[in-house]
Image 1 (cartoon, one colour):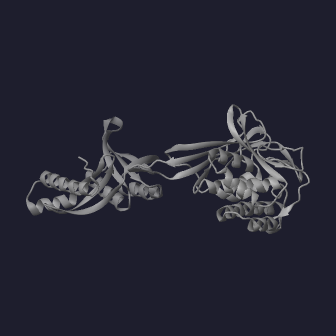
Image 2 (image 1 turned 90 degrees about the vertical axis):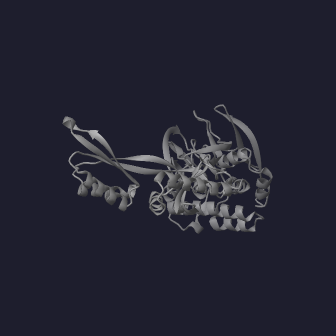
Amino acid sequence: MGQKILYLECNSGISGDMTVGALLDLGADRTFLQKSLESLHLGGFHTEIGRVTKCGLDACKFDVILEEEHHREHHHSGGKRHPGHAHRTLRDILEMLREADLDENVRALSEKIFYILAKAEGRVHGTEPENVHFHEVGAVDSIVDIVGAAACLVSLGVKETVVSTLREGCGTVHCQHGEMPVPVPAVTELAAQYSLPLEFTDTKGEMITPTGAAIAAAVRTREKLPKRFRILECGYGAGYKDFEHANVLRAMFVEEETSDASEESLWVVETNVDDCSGEQLGFLEEKLLGVGARDVWYSPIYMKKCRPAYMLQVLCDEDMLNTVQTLLFDESTTIGVRYYPVERRVLKRRMERMETSVGTLRFKICSRPGGEAAYPEYDDVRIACLDTGKSYQEVYETARREAQQKLAGGNGAIHP
């Protein structure tokens, strides 16, 4: 089985409660979440977990209900604002986490998210992270969102996370400091500090909250998904606002597909020559392979006025481009080259030395879908032919057959 990866698809931005909702919908343990929140001893709130429909999509909605407050003021896609909450510093929050009976992994991840957010707020307000007076993050609902997201992630056993491009709206939003442009300064600071990819849209309103951006920065371990994978599970977390698009955060568990082949990105450098001798091209091939080119080959072609010529092509890594091009200019008569990227898929292989009835030879062992296949190395076959007086074909086939039988003894598979 391949590696299991969490993918957060932020087509409608990201916020704390959207994250919790999506992870709950993905299968996070509700009991573990509730016990984690109860251990904070915050009081004065309770949580509600329900279902809502966003543009026809059924999604999980995680809500924090403050018991002393009946009128809630929602101001962005996933979060909410509660006027009058006491402000807390990072020290206050870290002390709260240390005193809580939290799972150590939940505590560590919660502290990481809070510190990331405090660092960004400190840069915005010109103060040290420890002295930042949080506004919304100091509010009960935002503390619950962060600890709740950490509890859900730990519950799901998340080790690797990919976060998509974060889509953001436009306009302004009202906060403790007054009217602020979207994205708010803390979000832009987080995006800059942690290289979060952003995409601005024409949607009016805030789609990325500082809490959501901090969670994304804290959990992202990979920049992109593997080239091939299969989706194992999918969950949707609902935001508060209704947009023309589905205001949800989608979370998926994907599994990277494994195979006997690996993929790599290489470059082809090519040129046409009609006035080089075969010896000169052969010397050039030796030099190209000697400096690390993956492969070199020639094709007969006809050029202008039907002149017979060769197209020389070189397969190499990107960091070899300048070296390869320099050799082509120095060691051939070309005055121009072409180059372009290619994708290559190759079988896994290894070199192994084996005893056979025709001598000790090196084999290239390739992993094929039907089993491992052994290919004798030419230089060793040549020496065996000279030593035994047998033909090339006889030595090659004997060595290959005996190597396959040895491989079959190890894994029960023989490739013809």
